Amino acid sequence: MLIIGLSLLICSFLGYSGWLKNKLNIDTAFIPFIYATTYTSTIYIFALLDIMKVWILLFNLIGVLLFILCIKHNISFKTLLPEYLFLFSFILFLIIYLTGRRSLAYDDFSHWGVISRLLIEEDGLNTANDFNIHYNTYPQATAYFSYGLVELMGYTESRILISNGILLFVSFFTFLSVLKKNIIDIILLLVSTYFVLIYNIRLFALSVDSILGIIPFAILAYRIYYKNCNDIKILFLIPMFVTLTLVKHSALLFVLFIFIVELLIDENMKIKLKWNTLSIVTSILTFVSWKIHVSMEFPQHTKHDLRFSSYKSIFSEKSTEDMINAIYSIIIEILHDKVFWIFIAILIIFYITKNKDKVIGKIIICSLVFYFIYQVGLYLTYVLSMSTSELKRLASYDRYIRSFHIFIILIGIYVLLKKYYKSYYMKLLLIIFLFFSTYTAKPVIQITEEQEEMRDLLDLKKKELGNVRNKNILVIFNKDDTSRYYTRMSMYIFDRANVTTTSEESDAIIDYDNFDIIVREKDIR
Image (cartoon, rainbow, N blue to C red; front, top):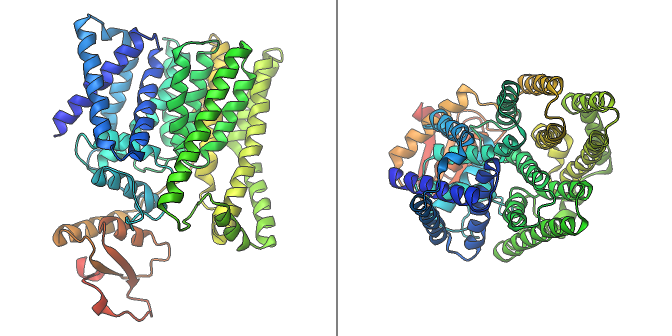
């Protein structure tokens, strides 16, 4: 199945690539991103119609047909080189690096790994009957893309990780459209790749925060590259914005940022109106369609629910003191945000040395305005959709702000290179900035040997037990699982079982007769 599925995917991808390159004259750097967003967005549409599997087979068969037609009409795939050599080299790296890996991040156990697996098992969206999905309102774009690849090759956790890495990279791949074939640009490309892969979410986790920052960058890069374009290329914005909107609720902030930048692009007003209208209408329709699906399928409130009643309920739990303290905490985070302020300082240097260039001035103003809006958005997220404890400690703030960093830094660099592509000192300074920003960044997700060992033990137990669907399982750890990390791990591994956890230290009274299976940590060690 792996060989057949992989061959189908490669031939299909090359078929679409050849058609986009030679028939529509799309720059090679944007082709994988167009392919990925079109695939993802259409899977979503057909998922709503409950025919996901039929669509991915049809989509890839069309791609294979295009591949055959390219060969028949002597359309050369050499036009995709050397960019595709870099693309496939990176995919090969992903395969080597991630094959055999398993999920170990908390958010993979609580949502991203669970939903990706469920779509493949069910060939459809999760429903109210799927009790193992706890965050039913979360958009699922990355899971759709993973489904489109992994469904054809056979499920493994590492293939989900690989597909997630591919979506991240093809979005970044658009950066090549502004680079030239010289040593300094190659170095900049490699350091930028290092920045995208390491700075926020690493490749061994499925959290979407890096993807959340890179997709809006890719859309804006496409938009800037094809400004004044008034042909079919405009229509590719539709799948791009569908995919972006479905990455995460906060993607709507990035839609706003793109809209503002579009207003500043110097081009024919009629063309600008077309691009802007298409962008906003697509995002609104996608958001509304997902909200309708959620409200129809899941009437009960869940975390990060977008319904007003949910916001009102969560807001009422917060005290005025907690909310004021959170403002102070965010201000402190802003003042200590070295990466952002160093980037602004670099932009100011360029602004002065380039005779107060208006384009650089716009980058500086947009960066500051967007940064303020994003911080306000984060604050409202904590107040309206997170618990009081999460508000007090600004839970996951680092990875949230790094999504913005990835977006604003890459699009800032892209615009600079678009205008000053001959400035070697500018490129050198940007290389130094990207390298040290990444090198000094503390990992937002850290995996310990103890966590890996527990994963091994529970995996062996699951293999021993076999099918545990609908079984009542009690897992007793040696120590209290205050973070609920191991609880989530247990729920993920014993999939479709009703899992309850406790510890040897707990004083809770438990009726052991209520459980079909009891797993004690001390017995499996």
